[in-house]
Amino acid sequence: MDIFIQNISKSYGEKQVLSHFSCVIPQGSCQAVMAPSGTGKTTLLRLILGLEQPEEGSISGIPARKSALFQEDRLFPQLSALKNLRMTMPKWNEEEARRLLSELGLGDCLNQPVSTLSGGQARRAALARALLYPGELLALDEPFTGLDEASRLRAAEVIRRFRWGRTLLLVTHREEDLPLLEIAERIALPSLQACQNMV
Image (cartoon, rainbow, N blue to C red; front, top):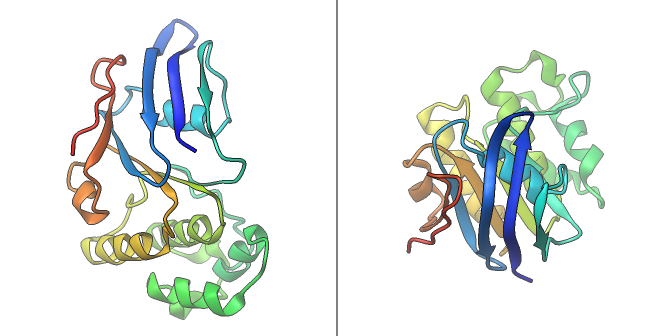
C-alpha cells in the first residue's frame, strides 16, 4: 500500500518544522528525503514511523511492521552485536545474523559487547539489526554516519541486497549517498512545503 502524507504540519514550541506538507511514497519504492540539516527530515521520518503525531493533516497507508535505523544506534551496550540482533528478530536465525554481520565487516567482533566497538562498528551493527527485522517499511536515518569510504560501499551493497523489495526511505543530506543505493526518487524539503519526485 502506498503511504499518503496529506497537508501535515509539525512544530516544536515556536519553531515550525513542517508546514502543510504533502507527498506520496509508492509501495516498494526507494525514496530519499533530501534537505539541509534542521529542515525537518528526521521529524518527517518520526511522523511516518508513528513516533510523533502531526498537529494538522494525516498520514495513511503506513504498514504495521516498520524497521528503522535512527540517528542514534540505540543498541544494548552490554550485549554483543549478535545478541543485539537476536533481541529484534521474530524468528532467530543465527547463521543469517552471523553472515550479515560478517558481510558488514564485523566478523571478528561478533561476541564483543557493543560498548567496546568503535563508532563505525556500532553503526554497522545497528544497521544489521534494522535490515534483519522484517518490516515492510525500511527507514534509514543517515545510515552511513561514521563509516569510512570502504565501509560505506560495503554497507550500501548489503542494504541493496537485504532490502527484499521493501519500501526504502533514506534520510540524508549527502547527495553522494543516493547512487550508492540506486535511488533516483527524492522527497525534497527545501522550503518545508515542497515535495517532488525526480527520476
